[in-house]
Image (cartoon, rainbow, N blue to C red):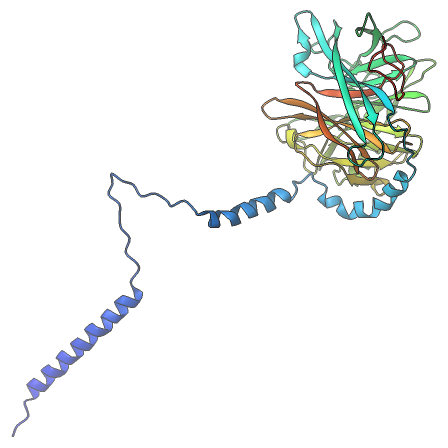
Length: 439
């Protein structure tokens, strides 16, 4: 019987085809991607919104980034600050506490920038009130009572039509003085009828109106007066402590890195080159000249601690940029010995205080009388990017413990200078029974 080889071959081929088809089906099922329904053109597909569970990790990441301080924060200084803690505690241990109920009349002067100009001249505001000590009660140890304000009118301005932009306030030689950061003029606030003040030029012994000049005083260019204090009987006036640069970062001048000392007897002005001091502070804060900057609006000398104290308004570890500078406010406290050199940043004690706000920085501070320069009244101003201005006040000690929570003093006012005015003009003397005004 002969074999039908043609049939055998056909059967084998048929079997192989079946096996191939079965293997392909298995392969297709394993490798096939899920089908997607394509929406018709009239109904474009929508990207599904993430659920709340999915959104939480994103929010957490954003918070971490926000908490990770910006380049001008205090984080790079933490190691330095940790070595300074004992120094601050040692200074704070010198504290003496006022009698409960003690109060100190206080005045604040405003810098309203371009808003100072009116049809009748240029106007600032002098706010008045008192700080009251309630006893050792933690963050409720002090209360600030602000009662009102009085206008300060002047007819003096600079060539660009700016004036009455007062940034510092001092009682000196039994006179209440304020300093214009546009004109460099020193103005005297003379008490008038009731609670009112007449603004007139503060004159030297020859009767010439006094004006604070930039740098060494050889050129008739006004100093941008930003802070004031008194030391060894002399009145000191300072500026931002930063060099002026052009759009390319080139130094134009360093005139605002000089300070002035006014003698109480002769009223002569001594021009002091403070570039070493300012650069020493920058060295401490890792904001070295050329790579960063500090901008000062608040500085005070303490006889008790034999140190200069600074609460810079702004800091940056990047070259100056006018747009970015608006968000460079800091919460840094510094204490430095007299005659600091540019490379002596290790002699500067530093710590953070209150909370950091990109738009809120210190415009002035005062040592509270009777506390051995251990309690500080801190004035901070905030300028939002849409032009809203607010002034805040608080009290802290030298370990930055809060003795009065930061409170709003005024809106639409940028108070930049503060002074204790007890017993001057219409103000009552310091005391537990002091009213806000005499009469």
